Image 1 (cartoon, helix red, strand yellow):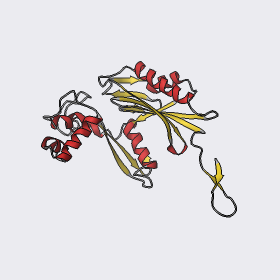
Image 2 (cartoon, helix red, strand yellow):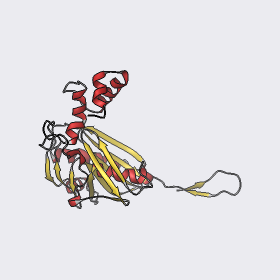
Image 3 (spheres, helix red, strand yellow):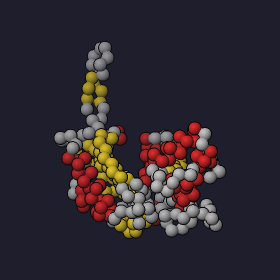
Image 4 (cartoon, helix red, strand yellow):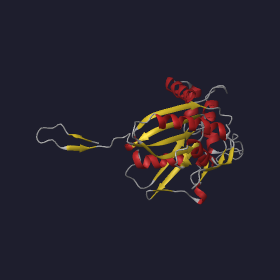
Length: 252
């Protein structure tokens, strides 16, 4: 898109991207919510849809149905003449590189689910759905546009209900063997008296420091969960509540 700079003298054309001319559809399958967005040039989010989902698990068909409905709504609401040039999704689990297969998603109970190909089929845009681990994609995002822009090596840690990580080395994502590097949330940190983890083991990092662990130490009842519950603990710690402060201390 061209425009005039508006300064005195001979007008000069200023070229800037028309962010909605081309766009991608982006999806996030988190532990407790489903998110879809239309993202234009320059990373501009022009529209976003979100829905909560049960934490107890969800079958592939129901998740894909919601996301496909979101995707079609965002696509049809795009400005006339614009074009969708790509589709991507982040998932809270282990993703096989290349085909978007969810090898293991403990929080949703998914094992070897063809998520990427199924979502592409339902969207019917003639585009593949590229799927990645949410923390790996977070590391790439910080490297490209965030706190890690301009550096070649970084370690990214992601905390939500669980814990994830991504590593950039020499400007490239460190995939590791099979694409499953940086699964820091499942490092064993308390082998003898550890809390149960969604993967079936005990004492994993995300079980010891994730959302539920923090809320338990802060004395919150089991029915309290989610971001607002965590924010309430932080607010209580600021007010001086001892249990909340203990939950946030580094020794945990």
